[in-house]
Structure formats: structure tokens, C-alpha cells
Amino acid sequence: MQNFTTAGYEFMNKLRFAILISIVTVSGFSQGMLLPVIAILFEQQGYPSSLNGMHATGLYIGVLLASPFMEKPLQKFGYKNMIITGGFLVMASLFAFPVLQSFWIWFVLRLLVGVGDHMLHFSTQTWITSLSTEQNRGKNISLYGLCFGLGFAAGPLLTAVAQTNPNLPFIISGAISLVIWGLAFILRNDFPEQTAAGSSGSTARFKDAWKLSWIAFLPPFIYGFLESSLNGNYPVYALRQGLTADHVALLLPAFAVGGIVFQLPLGIISDKIGRMRTILVVLFLGFLAFAAASFTQSFSMLLLCFFFAGMVLGSTFSLGLTFMADLLPKQLLPAGNLLCGICFSLGSISGPVIGGLYMEFVPGSSFFHIVAFLLAAVLAVYLAKGRTYEKSVAYKQ
Image (cartoon, rainbow, N blue to C red; front, side, top):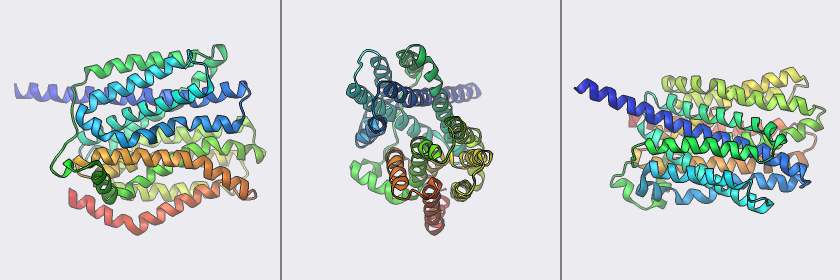
């Protein structure tokens, strides 16, 4: 009887994990669809690139606006109810795009998608990190990142459908979201762990989470910066350097594919050798990749540099998230997950701005220099401060 109970418990855990990463996959799919589809539609309608780019920040602004208000509802209503609410918000917004044809209404819908997606990610991240052990946390979070990456990479495929009917991408993405949203009702609700230490105010918990694990929030910032600047700034830089749009169409997916292929192996490696050491290695190798890219004029070498950079840096968000979970007690995980999301959003918003200003005021310099400099700066921080936090993980264990 005990063996049957144990087997049933393990099955339910696996089912719950499968549903959670399915939700994350569809969330990545909807985000990956919205960026290029709306950009192409606005370009065809004659909107200037500045307005197009500003519109694209709507999703990340929604994340930032929602972040301070996520922790208390999660503690009150639980993971399942937050996921259902966030999923409904995303799904309803996707179905609203074809009905409400307006530039500014679409911006509001993007904000709502950002809020809903953040509810999904915050809830699933916190649930997965709280259920994972020290031995499998890296593997579980890397699977989480892998599924989001697969969804995000598949989303742009709907741009071809948009040429047939501009409403179809939103309808298809909304329909897929509806199916996966229904699976959330199967889940049994659960709540974040709360203790006397976790019963203090939200501000105190944020301060505690930041003090104990601020170093773990730097990799998510880097990932947000890279994702947005490479997709937003690099195509302009590449065309100015004489590359064609076809070249850019191969270089950017090379970075994404590298991150997808090596997401899980790096997570498993981090379980074995430690998060801090893994982050040090990927930051150093990423710096070398972009430094090498700044000196080469060969397209084949650039393609290799992009793939290698994606291979090592495509896991920076999941590695930072896992390192944060290693450092924090369970009652601070909701606050830590929110701070990870905020740092990612800040990186996503600042990336195109800093990259654009750099190209404008330092026109003779390589775009890759600013990326390499950022990686070198964070690497220096880890070399200077990382050992202290690695000892904190060992003490916690």
C-alpha cells in the first residue's frame, strides 16, 4: 500500500511538472509570435520604426508594472489560481487583437499580455523552485528555460500565416493558450511556504531577498539585455556593416538554437559542479565569443560566434534563477522570483536603449564591444564577490 501511495505521489508530481512547463512553452510561443507579427503589420501600415520599437516595450512595461503586486495575491490565492488568472488574461488579450484594431489599444493589450505572462512565470517559477531539491534544481529550471525557449523560437513561424490573414496568428495562439489553460484546472492548488520570518511586510522580504541573493539577479539582467539588444539593435548594425537581411535571419536564430540545445546540459552541469562556477565559466566564454565577433569580418565566423555565445549565455536566466533559489530560504522565494523578473525586464528595456545610444555616439566602434564590456563587468563582480555567496549555499546545505 505504501509503495502504491509513493508511486501515485511521484506520478502526480511528474504530471504537475509537465503541465507547468507546457504552460511556460505556450507563454513563450505567444510572446515569440507577438514581437515579429505586430512589427511586420505596423511596418506594412507605415508606422515609423521609433513608434514600432516603443510599442514592443509594452509587454516588458506590463511586467514591471505588475511585479510589485504579485507576491501577496500568490500567498492568498495560491499557485493554481494565479496561473488560471494569468492564463485567462493572456488568452483573452490574444483573442481581442483581431477585434480591436487600434495602435494604442494594441499597446494596452500588450501590457495586459505582459501582466498575464508575468503571473504565469512568477507562479510557475516559484512553484518549481520550491518543489525542487538541491540535487535536481538546475535540471528542472533548465527544462523550464528550454521549454520557454522552444516556444519563443516557434512563435515567429506564425509570421508566414499573417501574410495570408493578419488575424490568424492571434487566433491560433489564443486557441493553443485555451487548450493549455484548461490543463491548469487539473492541478491541485498549493501555497508558498510561510514562516514567522516570511510574515513580515513585502518591503522587508524584498530587502532580505536582495541582500541575500543580489548577485544571482545579474545573469537574468544580462539575458534580458542580450535578447532585446541582439533582436532590436544588431540587425541595424549588421546592415550598416554590409551584411544582408538573409545573413541576419541566420545569425539571430543561431544564438537562439545554441541556447536551446545547451540549456539542459548546463543545468545538469551546474547541479554537479555548483552554480557559481558554472556562471563564471559561461560569462568568461560569452565574453570571448563576443570579443571574437568584434574582430571578424567573415560571415561563417560570425555564425559560429553567435551559436557559441547562445550555447553558453542562453542559460544565464535559468542559471541566475537557480542560484537565487540556492541562496534563499523557501519563504523568500516569491520575492526572489519577482526580483529576477524585474531585473530581466530592466535588461530587456535598457538593452535597445543603450545599444542604440552606443551606435549613435560611438559610430566607429563594434556593436559587440558594449556586450563584451557588460559581460566583463559582471564577470568581475562574480570574481570579487561570488566566493562569499558560494559559501552561503554550502552553509545552507
